[in-house]
Image 1 (cartoon, each protein chain N blue to C red):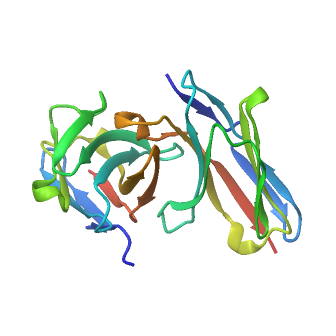
Image 2: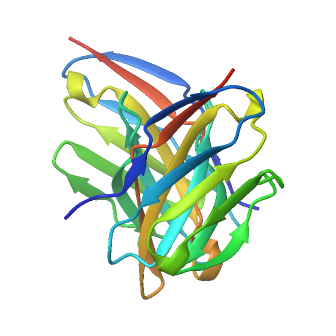
Length: 115
Length: 116
């Protein structure tokens, strides 16, 4: 059973550059979530997909952020024109709904530093 | 709106001591789920437990135990005979049920340091 994987694990970029992160969920999971975690804080919800449909976006997700999940498999999160405030850990989680229950399993995260 | 409060920012204990991590939550949902996750220095969040709002039975798994009290909106986590490998940040989280309500609301976490 392979877990959730994320790539890259670390990214350093200059302000104004675009970055893209990838998440590969657990294969049988139909839901995929993106969270952002800043230093000393708990993860905060950004957006989620059920299969290929993006069903909710947080107010934290500005216009510079876009996420996709083509064919309901892997997902990408792109940040355009990065700002120093985007520096954070970006976590991906996948979950499978069983009845009214769901447990999310997290990947190792992508740590972004914007200089 | 949902809210999770972990009042303890940091806890430091000596190996073999018992330690309890507190979690208080707020929700208007009648059906909800509570979780604990562990985040070691590597950064990956590791799922520990899920409880639903209708099941107030305490649960024990090895050295870990959880005390869910709906009357006080608390879901506390106890580690018995702590070990150095237990050192991590522990997060309590809350979700609703159905549709987009499965998204998790996390507390700010408690940094547990177990010293040899």
